[in-house]
Length: 70
Image (cartoon, rainbow, N blue to C red; front, top):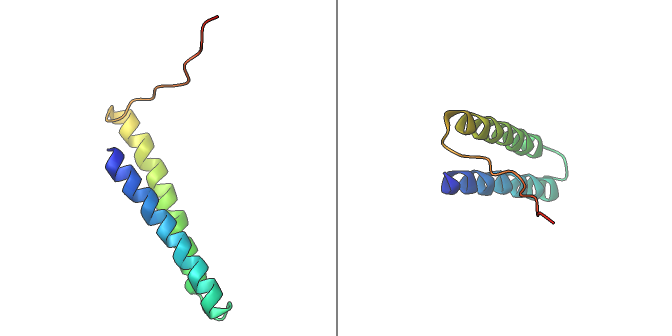
């Protein structure tokens, strides 16, 4: 599960990097930047929904924040 989520983060970062590349190269004359950012948003939403689903199914467990006793 960690590998899948890590790969999804890498793909999201790659989409963000490609949007930056298209922004610098095209100078705003094409829609490639907008398309790359749309893909990034869609992937981020899908990853969030997948994490919620995986938690609901019990594939991943939330650990919470441990409190230090005094």
